[in-house]
Length: 353
Ligand SMILES: [Zn+2]
Image (cartoon, rainbow, N blue to C red):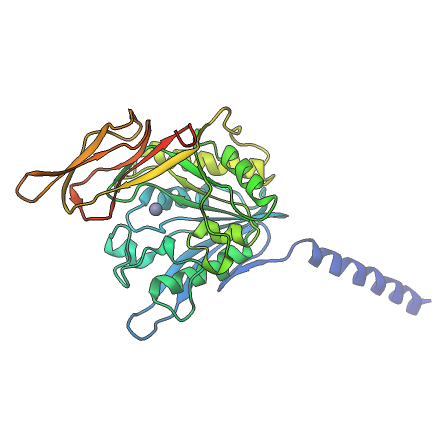
């Protein structure tokens, strides 16, 4: 009966082999493939086009041994935002893929041209703000092509997205997150739970993001318009690399991973956060030398002076006033200011207040 035994053994092998394969596949992002329980790092390419040299996007994939959510974290969308970059490097060293449920995609420096040139807001390649050109264009300018690669390779592969920012090199900022209320049913509420899990005690309620996936503008909103819960968080600023701002991002990711069931332990969600129901970016009407009269985290009355702009000979040409009572979420901390640029972000717990 050896032939029968062989046949029976073959059946067992056939049953077990696909079962093992189906249990957990490798995870691939662009040229980077991580088998289950491992970490793989590499580089996404944004190819050259006429007029520029293209660029690269360094990424890591932490692929847990067990299946679960795919959480993408993006750092360095703006050129002088360093605390997110450093926080992701620490996460890469401290998360053990063998005990992880699900997968992390880390985008270490999303906007390499701006990072290397140390520019705030705008890319040196095309003068565009990367976080205003999503979902990007494959045949567009360099910022638009970076956005297209991030949309296709990272956001489309993820189930949840956190775009990690801090104040740019000129922005003095108190920590907060944005909860985006627009989007498909269920996505907004899932995003709210992500914001609570991330642990920031100030949450800006953002009701004005576009609904159109072809004109999502912002990175996190690109995920939301594709049905994936997402968050933008802010921790740090002024081109600093302070420990508290880095640790806050690490703790936030740990809390979020616990919430998503990726790891069993982590910080509790924030209780009784301050919901910023009304917020406004105040802009300069003049070009010159800005001096703040407040600091991030200060409480201001309606009509309070936020700062002054002088001309280049020292004469005051503008006083920027708060349009409502609230808290300073960020204020510009360096003198250079051009007409139309932000000078401060003020928020209030009172809608319409
Ligand atoms: Zn930013």
